[in-house]
Structure formats: structure tokens, C-alpha cells
Length: 316
Figure 1 (tube, rainbow, N blue to C red):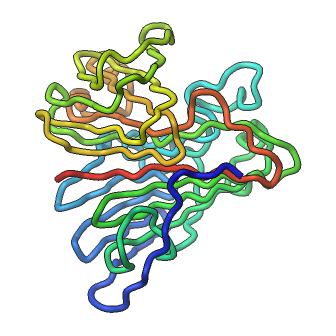
Figure 2: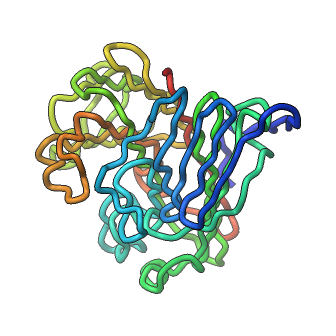
Figure 3: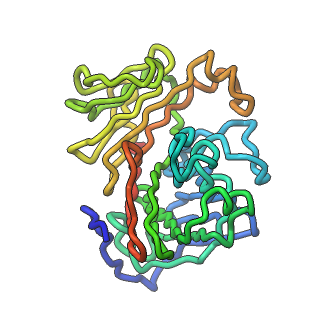
């Protein structure tokens, strides 16, 4: 069992006052707090497509995103598992598509609970957790053939007045070990990419995919955007990466048992080359800051489990 640095703490249920509401239509689960904060999660990919607080949408979703379960959803928070990027040759995941099958499989909605919410909320009236599950039974025959391990995933999305927490528990249900990577491919909505900087990068080495996957040392603590960015920052020693707009804090990404972060913006040329990226100038209104475990592989022994996640906080 891999120990987590930030274990969820128990909630003290509250039975007085307005309570959160949850609605599921078989394709999407929507939860709202009495404060008006809300989250929407598609069962396809268990992809969070909306997270609002104080009337503001925090996530970017392509206007051409496919929400019918035909392909990975462009935007929101897709779940990457069990491989990040194109699967490497001569590896157990080599027959899987880019970013694996987690984001292109139909997950089960397991229900709502207030038994824990990590660092979120103080009672059931101001936080709510939605649980989703994925096992080989949910996979297509093609995916089961490509990756024939026995596993179970439980994905928890907790909405509170303090932010949004996403946690993934991976369990090896079989009799042989398997390797995996995982990542939350979070698309954040921002007003203008030219006014954005990402901070919390001091002393971190990164792999630059634009420069032939070469490694570099961060120069300073921040990153500004003047063109395509596709970097894997690895082995953070601190847990928070922040998005600032006009030098004012806008969003925080707090890693829990995830040491890596991918930062991505396709810029003009990249957006035009992606069929479902709309509008084409949408790159000016989004930035991906993606907590993950993608530098190398996690090996999970038989009957062992791994849990990790992120907490997203908005300063609006």
C-alpha cells in the first residue's frame, strides 16, 4: 500500500439547514451546494465538465466537445489511466490509445457520500462527494484485450465551498503486478493567456515535448505563455502550483501523492490542428495545469492499492 501524504479527514454530518442536491440522468451527474456552487460529471470518462463557484466557471470546455460517448471529451477534467501520452513500444500498455482507456470508458455512478472530503468542507451541508467506479467489466472487448489485468478504480469528486477535490484509488485485483501512470488533464478557464503566469516551479526539472523531449531546469519560479507549451514538470518537492492573472492569484492546484505536473497550451497552430478544439482562438481562454504521476511507472503488486489526487481552489 502506498501511503498518502494528505489523508482525507472525516466529516461531521449536519442535518440542519439547506442540503446539497444531486441529479443523475444516466449520462451526467450534477451536484449543487446551497451556496450555488456546482459540479457536473459525465459518466463517459468520469470527466468533470463544469465546476462553478461564486457564479464563475473555472473549467474550459470546447464548444465542439463530444458529449455523446464517441470520443474523449475535449476540456474539463479527463482522467488519464493507465498510460500518459502515446503508449511506449514493448510495454504492457503498448496496444492502448493515447492517454489510456480511463477517459474513453463508461464509468458507473456509485452514489453520494459525506463520509470524507479530504481538506474540503466541514459538514454535509457545505460539501458533497460523488463516487464513480471502473473495472474490466466496463471496458470494451478491444480495451480488455489490449490490457488484460484485473483492476478496480474508484474516482471521488468532492465539491465544497472551499474548492473541488478529485481522488483516484487504483487497486490490483489480480494475481500479477501491473505498471500504470495517471493524471488529471485539467483545462482551466482563464480570461486572457497573455496575462497568465503559472508559479511554484522553482527548482523543478521539466521535459519539454516541443524541444524533442529534452530535459531542462526551470528558470525562476514562474512560466508565462508566448507560444505553444507542452512540458512535464517532475518530482516536485512542494505540493502547490498556482495560476495567476495580472499577478493576482486565480487558481491553485494542490497535489496529493502526485509528484508531477503537465502544463499545456496548444497556441494558435496547435488549436487549428485539433478537430474538436473550438473556438480556434480558445487557446487564449484556457490553460492546462495537470497533476499526475507520469514520470516513469508505478508498479502495483497483487491485491495492493494506490491513492492520489488533487485539490483545486479558486480565488474568485
